[in-house]
Image (tube, rainbow, N blue to C red; front, side, top):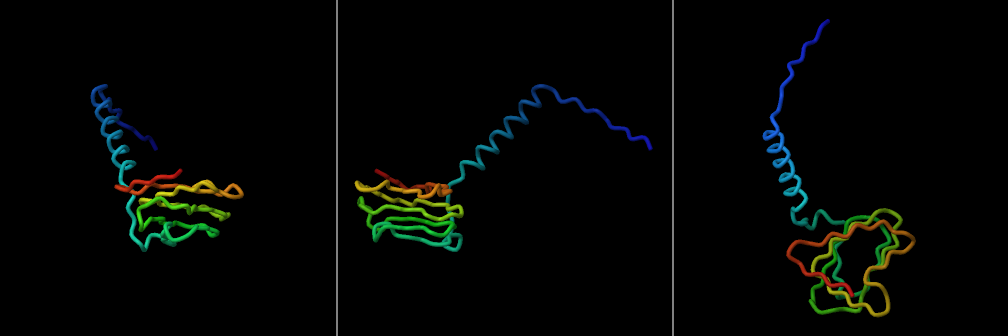
Length: 120
């Protein structure tokens, strides 16, 4: 069984055009704002109310309903991966790191679109 393939040549300008289109598509997809709905989270927490201790892996939205700096902080002790969506938090924690990762916790932090987050 003989198979024949037709060889097509792509000009340099066409190749550059395709690479530009690919690059724009990648930039567009990676620059999409982080926006999830409540059903997409394993939990939502108001950091202005208390210290947050995350002991179970999952996806969490952390927000600040007051909008003023708080002395509260986030501690992650989970052994499973944790994804934190920070949505307008202002944590000023003089006694502890704003986000404390214990025991080599695996944490991904995502900043929500159109939200100012301050950690000091």
